[in-house]
Image (cartoon, rainbow, N blue to C red; front, side):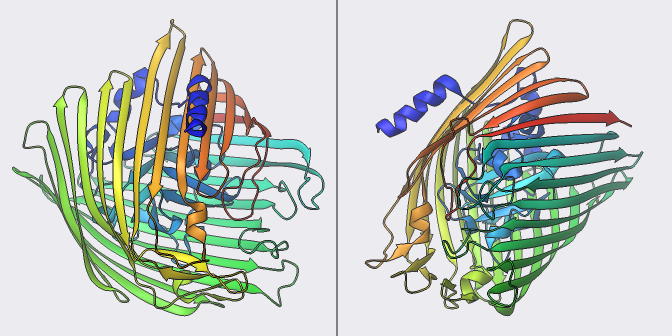
Length: 622
C-alpha cells in the first residue's frame, strides 16, 4: 500500500492537471461530442468519456498525440519510440488490439497489427480535441472497440490564419546506451493553414519530426500532410472531404525481437481518404453517407543494411461505406444505419488474405423522464470469418440533485483477430494461429459525479469479462510465440478523479486535477511454464496529475505520471512547460522526465531520460 500512497502524496503536493480555467467551463460542457451517432452535448453524456481540448494540448509539454494521451486516466500508452514514432494504446487494462482508433469518426485502426494504428497523418497543432470513450463501444462503432475507442477531431476552419510551431531539443548527453555516439537531439516543425469562405472551410496541415535517437539505431524521422474541406451547398446539404499521408521511418532496435534485432529498421507509410455529406431532409430526419479508404505499407528490415534476407513487406487496403441517419420524434431520438467494410493484405510472411464485414445499428435516446438520461441500442454484425453477432448496450444517468449525477452502463463488444494474429509466419520469433476465435466481452460500469462551479469530483467502478481472450504465449525460449484463446479474462477497476479551477487575485489562475486508477485482473487459465506477453504488460496502478498556474502573460504547467504494470517495476515521470506569450505568439521551454528516470513502456526499448526543448508558436491572421 505504501508504494501506492507515496506517489499519490507526491502528486497531490507537486503536480496536477490543466483543465479549462473557470471562464472556459461552460464552453467545455457545450461541446457536442462525436462518440454517439446521435450526438449530444458533453454535459448530457451517460458514458465514461474524457476530452483533451486544443487549449489543454497547448499547455502540455508534449510533442505528439501519443504523449497527450499519456495524461488521460485509464489510458495506457506504451511507446516503442518517442516523439510519435510508434505506440500501443490500451484502455482500462485491455490489450492494444482492443482499442479502436478513429479520425473524425472514420475508423483508422490497422488490420495488419494495431502497432500501426497510431500512425496518424495529423500534426498535433491541427487537433481540435481528442475524445476517449471508455468501455465497450461496439454499439456505437461496431467491432474492435472492445475496451473503448479514441476519436481524434481536427480543427474547423471558421477563420483564416496560418499557425506555425517550431521546436528543438536535446538531452545534452552522449548516446551512452549500446554503442551510440554523439549528442542526442532533434527538431520538429508544424504548420496549419485555415481558410474560410462564405460557404466553405479548409484546413491544410504539415508536420515534420527529425531526431537522431537516444541510443544506437533509434533515430526517428517522419513527415505528414493533412487536408480537410467542408462545403455547404445550403443550410440543409453539406459535404466534407479529408485526406492524409504520413511517412514514418525509425530505427527499430529492440522493438520486436531483442536482442537480435539490433540492426532492425522500419518504414511505415499510411494514406487515407474520406468523403462524406450531411442532408437535413426534413425538420426531423437527417441522412449522412460516407465513403473512406485507408492504405498502409509496412517495410520491416531485420538487417537494415541487407535487404536480401529477413525483410517483411506488408500492404493493407481497407474500403468502407457508411450510411447514418437520425429521426427526432415526440418520444425521443432514433439513430439507425448501415456500414460495409472490406479488408485485404498482401504480405511476404502473412500471405494474401481478405475478409468482409457488414453491420447495422439501431439506437434510441430520450430525456422524457425528468432528470433521467437514457440511451440504448444494438449493433448487428456479420463477418465472413466469424458469422453473425449482436452487441446490445444501455447507458443511464440520473441527475438526483442539481450537482450530482449517477450513471450506469452495460454493453457487449467483440474484437476480431488481426491478420498478424491469424497468419503470421515469422519463425523463429512469432507464428500466427488460423484457428483463433474472436474475443467477446460484457462490461458493467457505475460512476458518481459531483460538480459545482469549476470544482468536480468523480469516482467509478467497472467489471469486464472477456470470453476467448487472446494472448501470445510460448512454453520456452526455443519455440516461437503464438496466440491462443484462453477462456475468460476477468478484470475490474476502480478510479477517482478530482479537479478544480480558481482565480488568485485579478491576474492569476490555477487549475488542477488528480486521478488514480487501480486495475485487478483475474486468473487466466495458462498452462504451467508459459510465458505471456499480456501478463507482463498489464497495467495495475496509475496515478496522474497536472497543475497549471497562469499569471498575466506567463504560464507554468507541471505534470507527472506514476505507472505500475504487472511484473514490472513502477516508475514516475515528471514534466514542466514554461510559456510566455501574447495573443498571436508565444515562446516556451520544456523539461521532460525531470527526475531522469530509467523506464521501459513496452518491449526492450528504454525511453529517453531528461530532455530539454525550446519552441515557439506564431499565428498570422489572413
